[in-house]
Image (cartoon, rainbow, N blue to C red):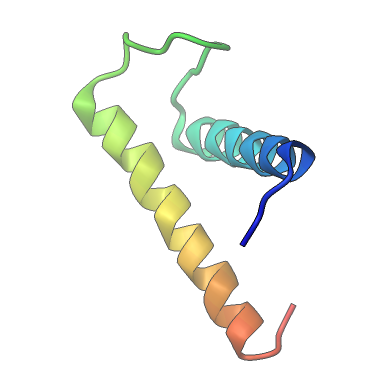
Length: 66
């Protein structure tokens, strides 16, 4: 499957938006760019919730829901 640069950039921006949204909901402050100040626990909490949401979205898509 071929991806065009525009498609990749849109997906990357969507992931960044999701990351920011999840971090905000978890009470974790993110900066643009470098976030090396986050603990492993904070980083994994953000990643874990993002994966949960992506799995839920895919399951809904596969079941014909929006």
